[in-house]
Length: 212
Image (cartoon, rainbow, N blue to C red):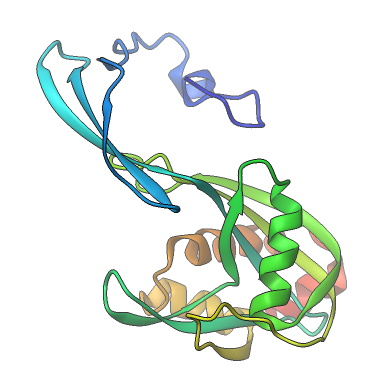
């Protein structure tokens, strides 16, 4: 089922025309096996599109993920470095975080940008909607490009010890391609911004600064 803000589902794409699509998964109503303020683990007795019975677990998130590519007029991007618990690694990422479902994604993105970098943006463009690891979780993300940036004070969470860097956009693209920047939201939004700069979807002067 497609319930994004866009009216287009994967089954509506041009190359899917005429395809005999498989039937959807079926399941009982499920039960909650674990729950906390951030997520709930649901267990289902399900039937696969092939007709095979299966027990399926889904991590259902309680917030929408948002990510922001803060793009300065000189073609640089502000990125944030932090330690991540699940993989016990330090990663460089775009400013990102979770937004309650009853809050507009843009308002949450503005807050995350301010809290993590101290930046405020005059112009915002929503550029991507993502499904993150959709075989095990219903987590979704909305991603933005922010321009017209002004500096202010950071307000990180009490569990965040952040490092902030301002890097040339081309350097960020290179690190994404090299596999040294691996956060999914950062990878996808960076490549989307690169596509925008190449395809004339950004102001000429800004695109030249990004790609120069």
